[in-house]
Amino acid sequence: MEFIVEEGKHLNNDCSTLVLPALSIGNVGQLAVDLLISSTRTERIGYLDDPYVLPCVGNDAYGPIPRGEVALPLEAYDSSLNKLTLVQQRSPVLKGMMVEFAKNLADFAADSGKKHVIVLSSLDFGQWQRIDMSSGSQIYYISSANMDGTDDDCEKLGWKKLHEYNPAQRRWKYLSTLAAGNAMQEDGLPFEDELEDEEDYYPSLPFAALFSCFKAKGLKVTCLLCYCSEGDNIPDAFNLADAACKLLELSPQNFHGDQGGNWAIPFSWKTVYGPPPDMSLF
Image (cartoon, rainbow, N blue to C red; front, side):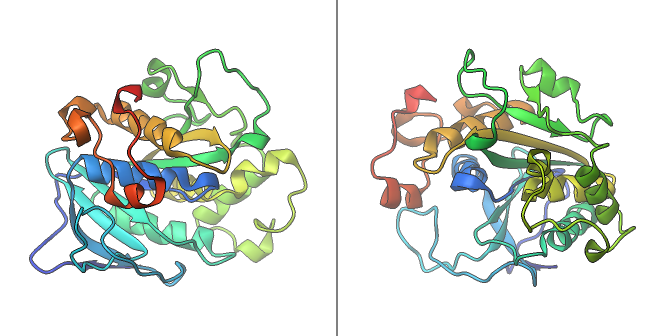
């Protein structure tokens, strides 16, 4: 993976936290990162070129007037005010190469001095085994802070550790071995064939590969997760972006949002989803 810096710009060494999506159902992680980029008024500083990410190209996703700036598959944004780097991913990884892509991304994070990585992703509502709607839409997490995936900071925020994360389970163990470079993928369990058990679903997802590879690099990594179905996932994106702000101790009240609200709606959303939702609901 190569990081190409835009002319006259550079990675800010003070931006020690990295936020990025893991592609999954409903693209909720990507939508949440879109919302954070637009609302924190970040500056695009460059893009990442990786052989395992499918190519794509588009126009500027955030400006109200298209300026002819090309949007690419992997872009990096810095928010110096919030000491934050965000990476947006707009196209999928080649089949069978997710672990290799995650290793490359972990190398970039470590080489650029990141200390904490926050991965935002969604999970298939159809896989939800322990339904509890008493508190509405819920955030789940796993963290490298402790061996069992728990994190005191996340617990204080009222989130639940993903019950299905079990580092002793065969696929999680195998994934950790791959991330550490102690095995080749063809030597063990396939990750993209038919799953043999329901417990295999979670470690087969992109967030699991990212979690394992960042952890293997010695970085603190926190995955924030929410269950959803395909459809209009804007409310889920707000929920996940708000969770990231809580973990980062950022207040959306300090953002420069639309119509007097806290959040700034990306221009690309308006062309796809129509008028912005009632900001007071989020």
